[in-house]
Length: 468
Image (tube, rainbow, N blue to C red; front, side, top):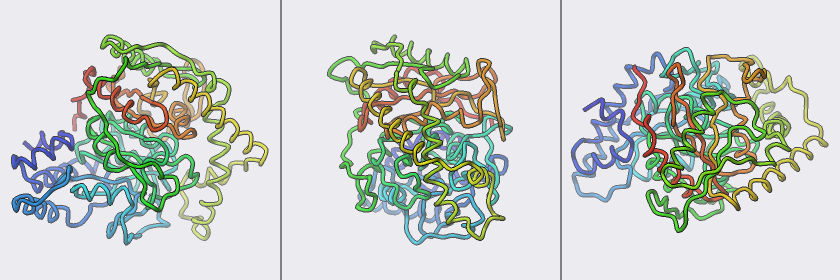
């Protein structure tokens, strides 16, 4: 039973608890036991939330008394340590914030709690959430549960590793350029970055650059992503970007009024991609076509005209430096690698900043044209499967690229604010998960979830777990 519980998705756990087949206390204890057994080698969990087991017992008593319960009643969840959690350490991956305990929950945390879920723990991240590997001076490095010598990605690598290893069924994460989707691909779980502003960023740090930061759920199934998104979306009266009403129907399994149109690509200006990653995207496209979906190989000229990764670098350096200088002033000896690297980078000139902004505008126009013709886009999540720790340069198709090239396929959807989802669809020759990314037009979250749900039914890797 314990093995079943730690590999069940949140929806199944909620149903088991509601039906009385298992108690919330049993579910929480199973995950606490799993954390005790596996976290020492993985280091995904950095803080346990006190009182989780007591909260589970209270949830069981409430259910027994016939009280009205939420859709996640008694189900444990974890949260990236950049989200404020009332009364629970939120240290942001830096000694500068060691011992910090917020008074209030981030909006996203409060909404999941309101659905009946129980905060179990906080998960690891890089310093200030800014890198593609989850490592910092305060809480150390997180390892990939599929291979401890490899990274679970960043910046939400602790969250992805916890879910993949069975320590948590559901998590909250944030995404600046890759941070929700890349870690999910590296560890074989699912994750969703909705349209910019759909989920308020209130109580999540950092915020700069405001245009690029998104919040989103990580989970074990597409239906869990749909449920979490429905609970999380909508204005909170504090985040000025969160303005669209939150009513949402995922419509999973529903028949669209016309055949879904999906384009797929593995290059089109995104740079070189690992051959096994490209083959996995092709396999997903073939699977959709075999299921009756209209699928075409496509290119997007806007991606070939303006390199999204170069645009992102020019814009982010300009906006992030002042925020990080303010935080690190007087604490220079407590800075980790990314802050030091950032401060060593040349400032973006005003002229280059304006040109980059104009480039982002062209990207938006290009995607608007594409999504006028197609409902969804299928492409790689990361350009390589999970890589070794502290990877520097690497070579693909004879081209040498830097570490951050892994995000060249995810950055476009942060710059433009488009929604995108990550899910596993393959396995590398050395046994590592390989994901595919599904994107759609602005506010077309239901389309993404519909396509992803179909892909999930066609996948042969959904129930694979690390051998821990």
